[in-house]
Every structure is written in structure tokens, then in C-alpha cells.
Image (cartoon, rainbow, N blue to C red; front, side, top):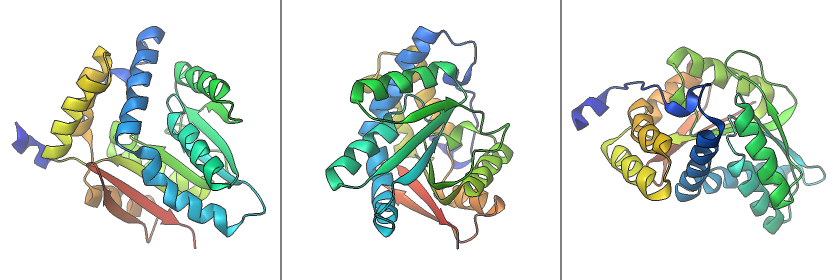
Length: 235
């Protein structure tokens, strides 16, 4: 079974089904948010965001989180920014109306002034004028051509691109299988966790996608646990 991880096998995920029941979708989003906390998604992004914010302390750093889900990553970044005394202007988009609604609800509960809106980053260009464009655990959902499209659009929308995703590997698969069952009671997450591990890119593959998207000079670095961060800055 593990030998098959040597090559990417894109497995359609249940959460990507537009016909998914909204109640089941929200339960899955809650599980994904716990997975993001467990895998330190916000911590992986934060050092680069803090460095950018401190370059222009006189104004808020404008951030667009692509495929934001329930908005848990930008909201976690907001908490870190508050502790660090830096200002963020947070925006997040997702193709799912259910996800956008969940993100708005979460922001209201947290008392965070963030803007969440529906947008299909594969079908349409992203709004421009952002300092940083981020996405977490999204790239592996896409075909290679669609991944290149989204990366290119992120580069057009922002000066800095940060992509945090899971690494395809045996430890990554085992971690995804266990975490899906420990962190969520959602059957969607139980299926999608291991499916994500099979669909994931390696850091080298992700870097090739970034180069194909025109993000020349991008880097791809391994991050604990079984994650990688693609980083690109416009010159």
C-alpha cells in the first residue's frame, strides 16, 4: 500500500462535493479546523507574515486566505497579531457558501473584523492589491493544471505567496489516518484525511508547480509535522 505513495494519486474528496449536506459540511469543517491547529498551520505561516508586517508598521498588512474553509487559519493569525502588536487586514475566500457562512460566524464569535466572501479561485482571478496571499491544505485538492492556475493567481493578487500543505509520504499518510479519526467524528474527514495524503504533493513537486505558475525564485521547505511551506516574494 505504501509503495503507491511514490506517485501522486489524486483522490476526489467528499468535502469538495457541492451536494454535500450543509450540516455534514460544517461538521467536516470543524474537523479540518482541529487538523489545522494540530498541524500548526498558523504557526507555519506566522513568521513570514510577522516579518512582512514589521516592514510597514504604519499600515495594516492586507492578507487574502484562499480556500479559507471555516476561516480558522486567518482567525488564528489574528490572535497572534494581537499578541505581537501588529495590524492585519484579513480577508478569506472559499467556493463553498457553507464554508463562508461558517467563517463569518467564527469571526463574529471571536470578535475579529475579517471579511469572508465566496470566490472560485480556479475559475476566476483573485481580487488584487493584497500584501500576502495564503492557503493551507488546499493545493492537494487540485489537479496539476488547476494548482498552477491558483498559484499564478495568488502571485497576481499579492506581493508574497505562502502555501502550507501536507507532504506526500508514509509518515504523512499514517498521521493523516490517525488524526482524521482522533480529531473528528465526521465520516467525511475520516475518508478525506487519508485521501488527502494520497493526493498530496511532495515539496519538490510543489516547487515545480510554483515555477510553472511563474513564481520564479520560490522556495519549498519541509515543516513539522509532515508539512511544507512554499514561499514566494515579488521582486
